[in-house]
Image (cartoon, rainbow, N blue to C red; front, side, top):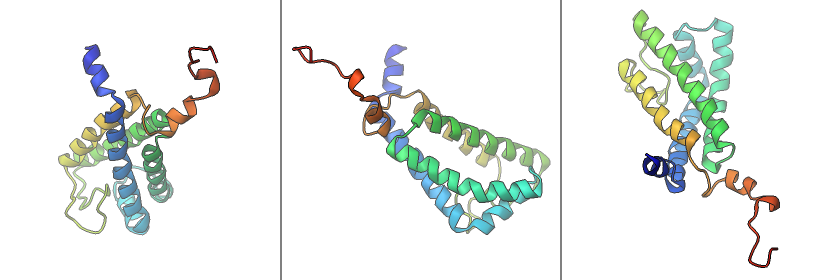
Length: 167
């Protein structure tokens, strides 16, 4: 079991996980930010939040996703970013399930491709969101020691190993 944990938290795997999440959230946030009014309409169509809150959420989420993507890209506050991402994904999954159970006829889930109807909405939306929790979990539990700002911040003088002369 220790060997599996070591493999699943390997620093090079963590780089790949962070890059995957970074690209995903940068692309998704950019798509939403550049089609903000369309995204706000989709958020309101979910009919989960009061209209004013759906408007605020729809206008803020793209920029939160861009920030999350940037933090994953540079490896800054990676565990906290993973927690925020897990909370976002959980809210998306709840909204998806509620609307699937209601039978809400949504043409687009609002996940990434806002300009076409190819993305659709259905149980595949929920399963994709659930699938994304795997790399988010890996990012939370992983060792971020390679190519990350987190590793640079941990390298303070009091944490450095002295050489053979004791300096």
